[in-house]
Image (cartoon, rainbow, N blue to C red; front, side, top):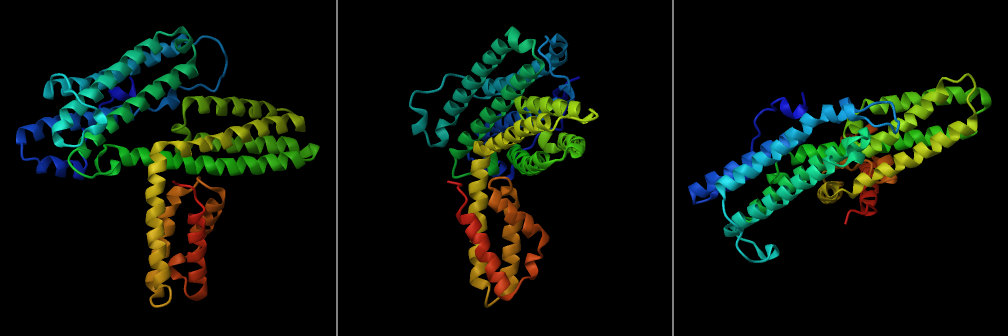
Length: 382
């Protein structure tokens, strides 16, 4: 049974979306739009609940893997059904063709039906593309490529549905994605988690590589076993579960190479150096998660909010050190969701976790605030 078939609980709308719907004077129109939003929320929920880890394998080879196709066929079917369920609701509630006019020029509530029709057309086209991809022998016969394609399409569907909700809600006033898009906060949290844990993995692998390069012959086996343990630990994290299938495949390949060295009596140091160097480069490449639009928007908001808190903390540092220290501590907690974006900032945040910032006073309080401001200033979030 696929995860999508396990009947997740009914989805709900965000408070801001409910507020928008309640404010609409046309109650019939509001009810129709509510039906679409609930269908979108349910589809987003169902499309995000699939854990691909159970379909993975620690064995990496090039042989055809048609058994996986049999496992994944129900998932693909349910994916199509979930998207079609939303399309059917839009067709039922807002039938007809979109009126003429450039989408970029649309601003008002009267353009919502056209925006829904456009979103529906894009989703329908994506369903066709999914069908074409699933008929590609190169995809169907390769476990990791099949997993990657299913993951990519489900992610794309969620993004398109999220955009549909955001664009139509924006027609009624200024809103943010976090305020109206179902599942947005969970999606951001998952991305933040991936970034933070892969950043720590990068530090661990880099440190291990340095030790391997300096290892004496009798220390090579121990280092190989330690690296194996570190990769195993990463494989149990939430970050690993949320990695793209292509990246997981490379991690699995590296884990197999390290494992092969870890069971040798006297592995060659250069062999371990070569594997560790490749792994180091791979893990560093995972920082590309920072380029996700989801995280870019999130980071800008957190960066701005932290800046405001630190300005308040600095202005209060002399006349009200207790309030100042509290604002500093709040900024540090908020900034933890930026962890993994910049190595220097990461070092500051790790140190901040160990300090009781809310108890700082005097010169130490002011110096910490100014140091924090300096870290924020050098972040490239724009």
